Length: 298
Image (cartoon, rainbow, N blue to C red):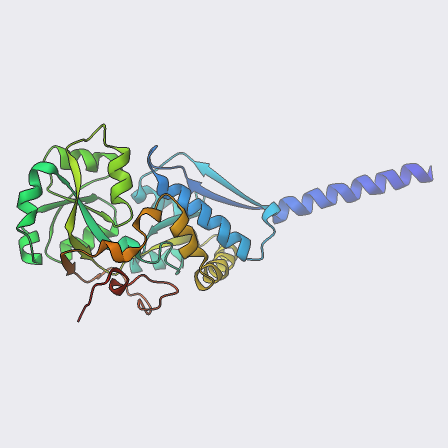
């Protein structure tokens, strides 16, 4: 009889442990990759793992799962709801701060703000004659309809046409529906390589670099404040200990751009970012600067 009671107590205790584990389990839900070529998704999932490892959280209680891919516009809406997804990486915007919790550590050290152009090969001579912002404004850029970049370019006086579909933007350049597709410095070569068979007429134009202070942040739903707090701590450690820079130099998304000094352009054009005010963009722990490319600015 005593043995039976002990077994019952043990089973009860085990059930309590499972119940406790379930109650303390944290599920992070993100959208799936935007396409088969969306290597940025893998980069950010790996960086998320690094931040979680730094955060002091029990990883055995953290599950990262994916829902079907959605547009960036819908991702922002769903993040605000906090039901379908509760975390995503987005271009930093002040407007998002009212509805979401920003983890204000640039996921690729602001490299995304340094832009090279994807153009059609037939446009090469046209772009060779561009050496100023006013000359560039005569051309039409392609961008995502819900991307912060669209606002940044438009408010700088540049002409922009948009699409909600990421893959369609490459097709638009190839068909001449726009003249250039500004991409993060680390994105261009890999994106062209992945689409070389589909769009052999596209190329990277190296002589111009367009820059605006910009970053991708992890954003967390306000329904998950404890997760946001832990991620902020984990990302700060990742930045200050060089883990983000190390990942950038190893991951296929970014490793091809190092050393940055090799990427110095003939013309460097800079525009402001009215959608976001960043803290201390000269801090090398968090930000890549024009000087890393050998560019001297006044």
